[in-house]
Each structure stands twice: as C-alpha cells, then as structure tokens.
Length: 218
Ligand code: 5RP
Image (tube, rainbow, N blue to C red; front, side, top):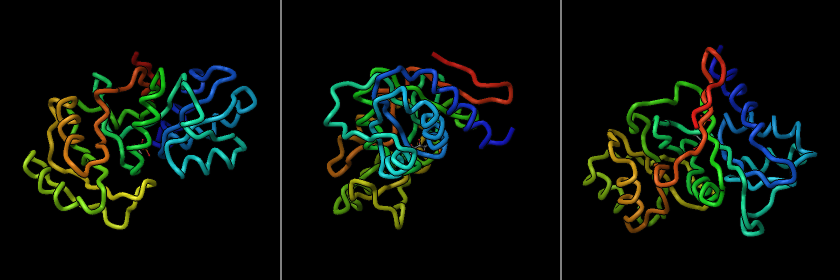
C-alpha cells in the first residue's frame, strides 16, 4: 500500500469518531484533505466545521460544509488532524504545513484530539523532523539566536507567510527528550507565537495506517 492509500484509509477511519449534530474541528494537511473528503459523505449529519487553516476552509466550503469561526462555538467534541511525527506518548511535532498556531488553538478547545497518521510518522523521540516555530516577522533573527542557544539549528522557511501573517523557523538537529518542557520554553521566547511541539496538549486517540490496516492507540 502506498503512502497516499494509507492516508486515505486512516482518514476514513476517523469518521466514526464524528457524532451527529456536532461541529467538527478540522486540521490541515494532505491526510486531513482525505478526511475532509470523507466528511463530505456524511455532511448531512453534522452542523458544520471549525477549520485550522485557510486551505482547509476552502476545501470544506467546496464540499458544501459550513465553516464556523471558533469564536462562535462554545465547545468542540472532536478535533481531527495529522502530524509530522508522533511518539508512543501521543506527543507530536506539527506545522509542516505552517498551520501550527491555529491547529493548537482548535485542539485546545476540543474535548478529544484524534490524530490520523500513516506509520512513517511514528518515532521513538521527536526531532528528526525540523521543529516549526511561528514567529512575529520583526523577531525572526532574535528568536533564531535564542533557538541556537537551546541547541537547535533554525532555518528560515523562505517564501512562507502563515495565515496569521507571520514567518516560520524550522529548527533542525533537536533531540526532543522532554517535549513538554521544550514546548513551554520555546513558547516563552519573546516574538514566538507558538511552536510545533504538541505535548502539553497531545492527542487522545491515534489512528495509524499500516500495511495490516488501521490501528487504534487510545
Ligand atoms: C500542518 C500539519 C500537518 O498535520 C502535518 O504537517 C502533517 O501533514 P500531512 O498529513 O500532509 O503529512 O501540522 O501544519
């Protein structure tokens, strides 16, 4: 099975977590795109969605799914999103698609975070995938120097502006043995909007597409 077939399989498996008459939190990325397509099949049973990026909003609307602003919504039952890396502790690196800040906000509101990945995303320790950090543009060089002090090698993601009007530094060569602590430390740097470690609010359920089908880790 190729990676796209795995992404589709795991995205379709996430649909069973969606309850009737609810608003669904929707992440961003190629795996989530398959989820949005699968959600379209049951769109008559849901109220609509809250989206974590302009790209996902566009795809949801193209399917005729109503998209609500997060500020209009008191609670979200489920948030479905992918990841760039995930550990057995359900800690993740996210933000390969530059949507990390909105993803973290929507995840914070949701009761249950269902993470959908193929098995290439499973790792023993986070950090092989460069850690995305969203930064206010004027703070880019300062934050980069501070990230070097933390042992990383930040690289400016040229040509990318986030949906929030900010820039991304991808931090290479980090071995993230204490993800909760590093998430908090980097978020404490002045000029950082957020970083792509999702450990203080990790996933609740992980669906993993493998050659032998979709496994559920909860
Ligand atoms: C976007 C993300 C995505 O969830 C992550 O990059 C995984 O994407 P894909 O499903 O395309 O591999 O965090 O900001």
